[in-house]
Length: 382
Ligand SMILES: Cc1ncc(COP(=O)(O)O)c(C=O)c1O
Image (cartoon, rainbow, N blue to C red; front, top):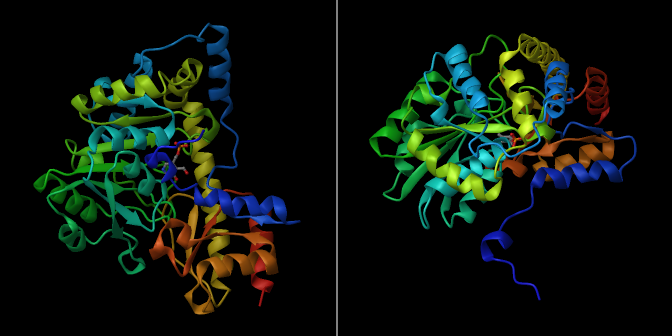
């Protein structure tokens, strides 16, 4: 007997995985498809986890997370952004994935509408299905620096609109949010009682002097911040993230989280405290950022030599969204062609929504040697 709920059977499989599967099927391939840091977790964080295990951190913790970690997260917002929050505004989650899941489940009712950026991280289209809510497209265009056009956003607002999803530094474009746009989004959200889910896991990877614009600063009562240790500290496998939101929302999120996860692994949470509070981890973050900056410049320089590719110059994250419209090929077709001719994997822009047509996403979360080799192969492909 097999009966799967319509909510779950309507979910799409994560697209990027499909493209990454091709790597294993083709010889001598360089993948620029990966969406996770290639660095190892900083040593001090690993040591903290080992110590925690030896000290007996092997039991349940409070559902919302260890109080000291919630405090460290609150401290962190004061230190970096001068935003005052209290530990009661924080819930520790299994990565930003769970943070987003809790947000959609806690705040959306059947038939309510959420505006989802296109191109964007495709999971945002799937979570609303689980809440029987509806997603509507918020177009991000290259000519606007891949930021929402506030006039267009306003036009999309209806009585049923409950949430806007914002993700900067952005996956897949590498765009960083403009302060003016942040203020405009905040004004609309406040005027029409709309929540903002702001997914900010790439906040520390910024280039050319760009600054992160945290949505919490502009609409603190409307913003649900999803964040993660995954990218910042190269901790994708640890599954550690958090949500910051008004206390009454966090209280309800804790109820749901208690049934789904219970609590994030106790020793992982202890390591999270070390990640946030120890200087060694921040030093490692800055080293990773510098390395990403060099790789980004390397790829951009090479791409400038390829006449049929026009790269959008990213100020954040570790992706380059490149316009391939001059080739006359569709994104999927181009990605297939590149794999065949150059044995280089990139993700077609359409894996991030229909507005991604005509683009490819190149990830530079891989070594300079591999990036240089991949660029040479691309330059040699006719
Ligand atoms: C924009 C965005 N949000 C959330 C996630 C999920 O990250 P985590 O590992 O924290 O669950 C990712 C991972 O690729 C991402 O790119």
